[in-house]
Length: 288
Image (tube, rainbow, N blue to C red; front, side, top):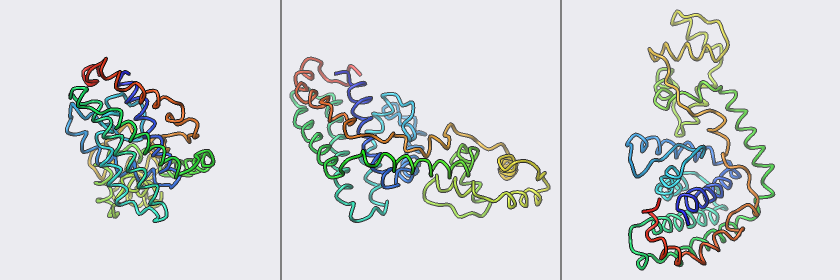
């Protein structure tokens, strides 16, 4: 059992995909991305060696990025569910998802600890985690029926972002907030909502603002936006690597029940041999 592949690239990826697919079906995935990224972006500035977290959606993540996300997962999902205004009839699923996230967080913490194998009851923690995964999936039902719904939701979301244009999607968080303030636009809770607000400024309003500043008013909307934003900031806008496609796609493809890793026997195999592997390998953190 190599920690990087078995835990980070396999188990963590599937746990994230499972939860994000549910959030996509509820049309809450973009809200979660916006909520989580505001917290993640602050943590990124600390440059922590032991928590190399990366912004959502999950794309080109390495093992350290996934393990860092696991460290934050209980807080990110828990605080999001606390403020997400999810319908009361979905509370059973929210509770199941919380249990699954917390059980996985505890399992990974245990497996990656520096304690001796005799202090780490990996088998019982693995059983607990697999039980929470089973009941979460059982209560939610089949993902197969939701594939077309997820695709349609992604297409609608991408169309909105194309209207907001790629420039707005790539502007840094700080510049977005500063531009909204200078344009007297009320900021929203989620950063993605703020980007959409900025992108939806009509072309005639952009031209009027530029005319008031004594600037040229010719060109396409993206050119007018960049010209106005640069003048308002007194410098070139700061761009990030985030694009509209990656920001709003529910990064996780619609998955089928048979694709879930716990339905393929991989975790059952790990459960059966986890104590032997721990005894043979020693603390997994030392071979990360």
